Length: 288
Ligand SMILES: NC(=O)c1ccc[n+]([C@@H]2O[C@H](COP(=O)([O-])OP(=O)(O)OC[C@H]3O[C@@H](n4cnc5c(N)ncnc54)[C@H](OP(=O)(O)O)[C@@H]3O)[C@@H](O)[C@H]2O)c1
Picture: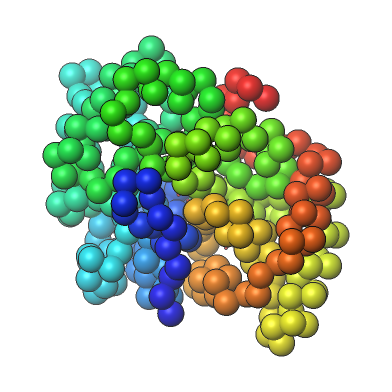
């Protein structure tokens, strides 16, 4: 099955769902997980320098036997060591990944570059111009951070990857407006948090009733995770998820085959989400 793609503002395209090598794989060998993800249909792998597993991510990609041209690989810039630049940091990543080029290079966290964001963004642009990455973007950026880089940017970010689920959707509206204005694709991490991190909340009942409706319509099992990921997909969001289990990897990929939520169901999820503001990951959301 071909994974549908989202168009980026620089003319490239990104598979709408990606397999993350952070969270449980942080500092761990990612080889087997990456191999399993690709074998089961993932074509987009999300890595980062701070995960300290780019080497094994790269080995997993090679072991999968999938041609490089059929894969989309992301890495993210961590703190800059003295004398380093986004470009030199990416060159080191590429060596570890055993690649000539990544598809997407993100500034992982603006808090790692306080007072240097403009310079860092110019360095990101250099990486794209020099062909070390096809696209560039950011992660965990709030309105304030965009304002800062837009003072110097000649290339806008293509993606902002941030904690995104219905419990933060309302609070994120100012940053989502910036995404819309500049054609920046919104990418989620922690999308399943309302279901599996923390207590049950106003979303649980709504998601369950939609799941039952979709399962009856489909005539095949539909999970709560698929309902939330489908909601994100229908909102135009690029979903980054992960799992340690092959069965769940298949379930994530199968989300593409789940019937759409109706407009009313989309609104129901949004409304239930707006009743509780809850973050599960750290973030510096100055506007909240
Ligand atoms: N840019 C950033 O700052 C940032 C921050 C955090 C994460 N990320 C990226 O986003 C990726 C996705 O991470 P995430 O944890 O946020 O993804 P997520 O989609 O919110 O959650 C995935 C987790 O949910 C669990 N899960 C799924 N279905 C479940 C079920 N039915 N019952 C119980 N648990 C279930 C999985 O556990 P199992 O392993 O048991 O399946 C997995 O650990 C990371 O790997 C990383 O690449 C980026």
